[in-house]
Length: 382
Image (cartoon, rainbow, N blue to C red):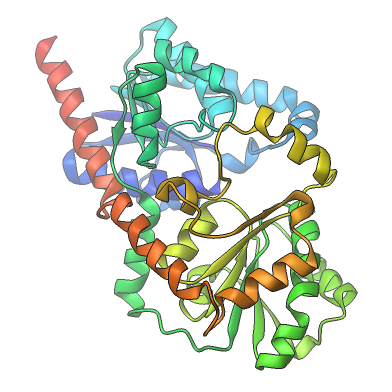
């Protein structure tokens, strides 16, 4: 069968690549065309456009590159019409992908499957109208989404497991069980320039005395799109002793495997840190903090910002958001999760509860099996 996939960012490229491998295992005659990246290209030919050509996030960047994005969207629609795939598989990236779903549905080209459902439970809940109208099958990687979509919107979705579990599991199988060295503190300050600048500067000020007192080293996970000298300027401004700080490129899992604790911004990184059983403090600075806290209920529809707490349904890890993310609070929470800290063991126990909720690895395989089965059943009824 012919598959057309769209992944619009680095994480989607990785998840889509694993899904493509699983589809090949289920359907030996699988052919692909796709918008994606290097990981997908390593699986099969058929890349029509690299996601970096269209990967603009945030209001201003999207506005400035609107013509490029719209032109890319038109081209994508034309390519789908010409290819006539058996299915279009969308991977996250809802701003672009829901527009494509609407086109495919209106043109009645083929079914639309959505792998890694849009997070409408956090924002833009109105997108449920588009999903209900244009998406034939929705696949979730977060277990709490099943109840949310069914209870609130009477829309059935399929939970297939979480691909981060597969990625961590693959790393552990290759490199062995994590063995923290007791001296490494991981700092994962995000991936965007302003996000890193805001979070890392405060993280470093908070950890400086802890590093000296406990003879530890802070290792900073570097975002692929940001230059090393950007991080070096932040380190220099913090006043932290250079021998206590190390920059780590493209080795986040290796970093987590040797870390005894971590400071992490929100996102998939919080889940990765938990799966490596590294106690963490979630840190996310936002300007105009008091105003954000006042308006939080209007913008956020969920009680937590970290995936660890959202999946677990409880506050497993502390979350310091907006003006609560300050040097004093970060240092206090960090000390409580270091060895012999008052909250360390409780957090590790919470990780175990959360992991049981996530279930077993195998998300791409489960999704591929369901997708191929549905497509074959459709073909047999025609």
